[in-house]
Length: 141
Ligand SMILES: [Zn+2]
Image (cartoon, rainbow, N blue to C red; front, side):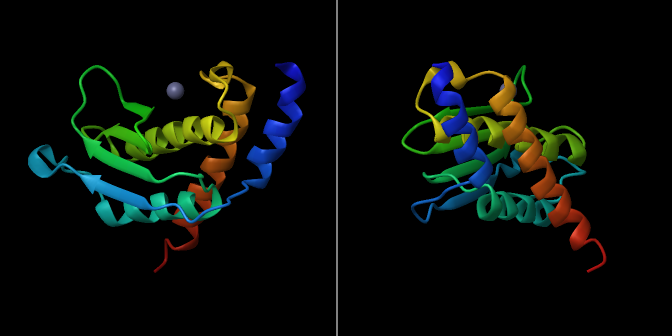
């Protein structure tokens, strides 16, 4: 397992993408939180898709969740669910957190890479920089 680490890390750092994955961003409006900013969230998702691409379609859904802030699972595509009843900063942080899980899974099919280990940390840092760069670069628009 350890011998695979450098290759996976390199794949994460280079963000290789061999296809043109689709991005779907959805919001369940039944309990739309007051502070939620759909346009800003959409920009963050698109920046991640561009700079931290995944080799499969991604569906990001903001919705009420019970007992957790976010979840990522595989169902023929990456499906990221985010608790929308939290401050916008929390929504964005959860998006980055969950996207990082997808990045790690995307780079290796080995479930040993689940959780919040070093590879996830690298992915999180990269995704965080992408979102912050996107949101600060266009803050004056
Ligand atoms: Zn996690």
